Picture 1 (cartoon, rainbow, N blue to C red):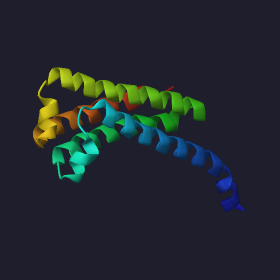
Picture 2 (picture 1 turned 30 degrees about the horizontal axis):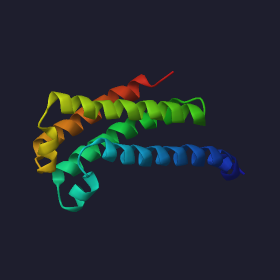
Picture 3 (picture 1 turned 180 degrees about the vertical axis):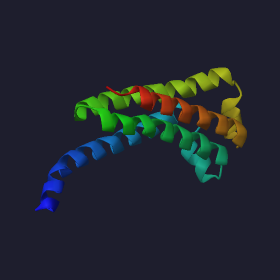
Length: 135
């Protein structure tokens, strides 16, 4: 019987996990449209800088999303705060472009150092964002 009792929360797990996967997928689609270069094509072409910057952005979004899942009071609350986390992560990219005007060309040209700085900014803000999304 303990196994059946444990599985009683499976529907909630599936709802939260499914919602989180949709949010991550949505974030990736929006992020690629938000940047002026095609990350997936650059990555397919072997551009390590594009992979670093996109990877940092996705992880920078996933960290607060995980915190949202752990601290939300319901599924809709998770979605709302997940969207807030998404907006924050997009703002990180916008700020990085302002602070480093050559960032776009650097990533397109495969320069790993600026992409790593962008990924670090994304991860740092994501971690702070995750800590702030609590009740």
